[in-house]
Each structure stands twice: as structure tokens, then as C-alpha cells.
Amino acid sequence: MKSFIELLKKALQKANICVQEAVEDADLTIVNTAISVAPQYDYVRVVGEDIDLLVLLTALASTHSNFFFQKCGRGKTPDSYYSTTSINHKFSNELLFIHAISGCDITSALFGQGKNKFINLFLKHEELLNRAETFLNPQATTEQVAEAGENVLVALYGGDPATQNLDELRYHSFVKAAAKTKFNLARLPPTTDAAQLHAMRSYHQVQTWSGNEKDPLKWG
Image (cartoon, rainbow, N blue to C red; front, top):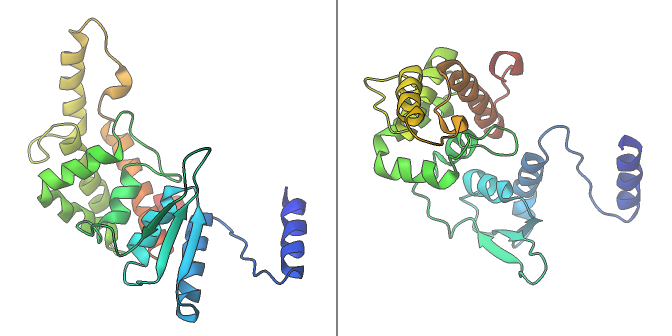
């Protein structure tokens, strides 16, 4: 595979096409490359199928009015076009946090808890957005990140972050579910330990997107 990439890279360069080879996160490389060349052009169009590209563009390049994202259609579905300035920026500062903790290409997702549920949670409980500030803080400690992440997940599963932790909520949810004829264990809240690891991984990814390198052995 590596040899094929090198062969393709040389062929494109020979055709006078600028090539950037991603070392880790290809989406971030694409977005950062687009941002770096934006001043040279009237507009920049990023083409792809991954909605992660639109999220990163909106979060990292929202001040650029000449950015457009083209999501390729399939079959009879036409291509879709988005401008980073036409999207509701209510959560613009917290967008990377919401994207990471709700699950993306690089972080795990919680079973049955989609992005819409996270968005609705923050619309209903805007005080939880304060927890996002911890994930945006490059100086945050593992303890602060773990606590903030658990608070958000407790609220997501219908608990009260002020009086409950995930282990308690998981137990009470199990007792209620066990009384039913059928239930899916995967829908139970995660354990506190699992949630803390998810929070730290999400923090690491948010910081990476923000250009702050963190030790993956500590956070990943």
C-alpha cells in the first residue's frame, strides 16, 4: 500500500498537482491545507464524502467567507454544497467537543446516542456547555476532563450530574430494564471508568484538531 501511495504521489506531482500526504488524520490535513491556501484564491472548495470535513471546516475556518464544502452525491442523489458561514453557529465554540464526545471517525460512539441527542441535550441544558470549556482548555488536567465528561454523560442518560455518577445511574437503569421482557444491555450508561477513558480520548482529539499536541499515552 505504501509503495502504491508513493507511486500515485509521484504521478500527481509529475502532472503539476500539489500533493499533501497525511501522516495521521487525513481530514485535518485536508482542512488545514485548505485554510493555508485560502488567501491565494477567491474561493476554496473542499470536496469529499465525509461529514467530518464540514465539521472541521465550520469549527476551524468559520471566519473565512470563501470556504465551501462539496459533499459528493451517490446514484441519483446530487452533490450538496455548504458554506461555513451559512451554518448556525450557536455551538461554534463547542462544535469540536460535541463532535468528538458524540463519536466520530477517530473517537468511539455511545450505543444508541446519536449526535442529534447530544445537540438537543445542549439546547435544553445550556449550562452543560461550561463543561465543554474544559475540553477546549489546553492546560486541563485528566481529573478535570474526566469529571466534565462524566457530568455530560450523566445528563445525556437522564441523570442529575449534581447528585449522581454513572455507576449509580447504570445500576438504577439496569434494575428498571431488568423488569422488562426484553432489554438491550448496550443501552445502559457506560461505567465511570469507561466514560473517563472516553472523555480523555475526546479531549486528546479536540486538542489535536486545535493544533495542540498532547501525549497520546496520557490521553489517548
